[in-house]
Each structure stands twice: as C-alpha cells, then as structure tokens.
Length: 500
Ligand SMILES: Nc1ncnc2c1ncn2[C@@H]1O[C@H](COP(=O)(O)OP(=O)(O)OP(=O)(O)O)[C@@H](O)[C@H]1O
Image (cartoon, rainbow, N blue to C red):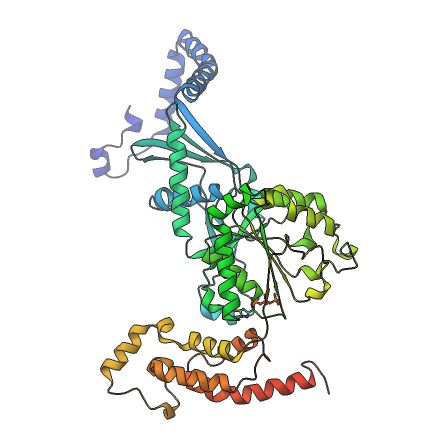
C-alpha cells in the first residue's frame, strides 16, 4: 500500500509526498471491488457481539457466584465497629502502605497536627489532609489468600464527620478461599492484637458521632501516668487498689456467686481545674481501658440514652462529666433550652441496667456535689468518692519535681553533664537549664518552691500555668514563685474580671 509507506528509505529521502488524487482513485477502486456478501456477513457477526458479551458476562457472574458459594468464606464487619478499625489499620500498615498507596481522599485539615510550627502563628492555616482511599485489596497471609473489600456507600457520611481519620468508618468484608471461616476469625484476632499493641501508649476516647447514632473513636490521648495527677497520695492509692480489685476476674465471680450486681461507680468532685478529667484518663491508661464519654445535655431523650448505654461494651470507663450541670436536686429534667429530655430516672435506670453490670467503671465528675440528687450518689451507684481539691504543698513539690526531674527530661543528659563537668554550674548563674541541676539540688529547689505556696489555695491547673512560663529553668521557677503567689492572691481578692 504505497500511500501508507513511510519506511526508512522514504524518510531518508525527506518527507513522503501525499498524493491526494492517487489516494482517491485507489479508494474508489476498493469500494467498487467490495463484495457485498462479505459486508453482510460482517454485519451479521457484529449484531451477535452484544449477545455474546452478555452471555460471557452471565457465565462469569455464575461462575463467580458458584466459587463464592462453594469455595469462599467471608466475614462482614459493620462500619464504626472497633474491630473494623483494627482490621483496617492492619491492612493499611501491612498491605496498602507497603505497596505505595497511590489513592487518597483530600480534605481540608482542621488545624490538628500542623507540621509547620510557624503556621500556628498565622491568622488562618488550612492545610490539606490526605486520607487513605482504597476499595479492595488481595493479599497472602500465613499461606492463605485473603481479600478485603470496603463498601463506600457510607463513605460520604463518615467523611462529613470532621474527627474521622479515614479508618474504619465503612463496612468491610473479609473473604478467603475455603469452606471454614476459622482462618478469617484467626486473622481478625491477629488484627485486634496488632491494633492493641499499637495503641498501648494511648487511651482511645469514644464519643457519639455527630448524628448521635453510634459510638466512634474520637481521638487517642497519649497515656498519662497516674503519678502526673497530683492529689492526696493515700486517697490515690486506695482508689487504684479499689479499681484493680473490682476489675479482677475473681471479684466478678465473687459478686456473681453472692448475687450482687457487678458494677462500681466513682464520683470525682472538686473545683474546676483540679484534675478530675485528667484522673479519669490516667485510670483508663493504667488499666488499659477505652473511655466512653457520655454528654448528657446532647442526648435527645431517655430512649436514646438507653440505646447508647446498650452499645457500650463491657470493661471500659464510662465518663459522665459535670453531671451537676444537668440536674439539680430539685429539677428532675434538664432545661428545655438544651433540647434534651433526658430525665434523672432515665439516667438512674441505665446506671442500674443489665449492661452496667458487665465490669464497667462508671465515673461521674462534678464541681458542685451539693447539687446532686441523693439517689444518684447513693451507695450502689456511687461506691467511691474522691475529693480533688486545691494543691497542697506536698503535691506542689511533686509537681515541681515532675516538671524538672532529670528522668523525665533525659537522665542520660544529666549523667553526661556530670561526666564532662567537674561540678554542676553555679546555681547563682541564673542562665542555666534544668539539665545542669543535680537531683539533690532539684529536691532542694522543690522544697524551696513549695514552701512559698500557701497550702490548698491554688488549683493544680493554675500552678501548671505558672510552670508553662518557666519550663527552661528550675531555679527561675523557684525564684519567681513568690512574686507569682502575691500577684495571684491580689487577683483573687480583687476578682479576676473586675473593671475599675
Ligand atoms: N491534680 C492535678 N495534677 C496534675 N495536673 C493537673 C491536676 N489538676 C489539673 N491539672 C492540669 O490542669 C489542666 C485541667 O485539668 P482537668 O481538666 O483534669 O481538670 P478538671 O478538674 O477536670 O476541670 P473541670 O472541672 O473544669 O473539667 C490539665 O492540663 C491538667 O494537666
């Protein structure tokens, strides 16, 4: 076919010359020579093609259904279930990320975990968050082929929740070749253990999703050691012993054998900023429990409250904060302004309900215990009350040590300094950092610091505010506390927001 010829020779001689009249003549000749009987058979074959395609499609579908029915087992995990999150986390870490995830969902970041520290100083910072996006994945695990598919029907609903991080919010289906679902169950268990080991340094806080329909992991808080919550040491020891004893499986059997409901309630009360919430999180970390936040004012009615409690798993912490803001002794119903019709008896019912007898630790916090209905705090509902008050001198000294103690800031650094310097720098030199202070000096400074603080006058959060200004120097902190105390006392006397 000369008019298509553009081989090496023609290229060498320059561009081939396109001869239009010649081309037309050949085309005409081809049309004249066309055998119409061939054309007819081609048409007939073409008309059969769609039917053939449909047939092949159906055969493929039937074969796939047959394979699924007779050779594949599967387990479906609903959206939002904690185990869904565990499986998805395993899959992302072990299959999808290593294969270099190429598909993402982009969403405007709400300001958490901003990477550019300077950005926090700007007026508006709107970085973009990229969440993993995947629909299905095949992989081998312990010699077996698995497939996990994700239903994206609920994807948009999950994404409209600003706290959703793209993990575990959609239904997933795990399939594997074989007639038994045992290998899949083992795989799920493996994922659960994996996620647990990953989150052992965090407390997972659950709250209701924005529609109030299901519990969702809201955020993970780094573990907070109990030693970092300062209050009466004896009360703290007794409280932890009480919870440990309650969670012991032997205690559960004892309760059951004596027909006692297996539940325990705690009330943390005291002024704002004394560590009630911090203590709840520290307890969750100490005992490896998830924490479920119940915000009563945002619950529609008793039915919804009951539904919520039914969906809370056994062995966890249920935290009802600022419960005094909800009811007083006289009012049985929260004010209509809140749009909630939860009644006190509705709450008492769920606290006594069957679900609550499954080893949950129920914690109520309040700033005004005197406002609480006696039915709410009677023994059996509240078994242990903890007063969290203003900070004592002993706790202030502990807090000082926590802020500057070398083992928290890097004991090695202190040792290095001790090795390389004949003595720690003079305390008077004013400009040194805490790591130059020896442990003995730090203890002296802590005593000097605590002696200047009036007993049980300031809240621990106030003192924490003071430390935030002096994190670099233990000496400066000890020197400045006197002036700070005087200033705070005068503010107390005058009233913080008094305008002259
Ligand atoms: N006893 C304490 N020990 C150590 N830190 C504390 C203590 N109390 C408060 N803080 C610090 O003060 C801040 C506020 O504490 P937290 O929210 O736990 O107090 P709260 O009693 O629950 O307050 P509110 O009643 O207003 O909810 C936290 O950053 C916490 O670290």
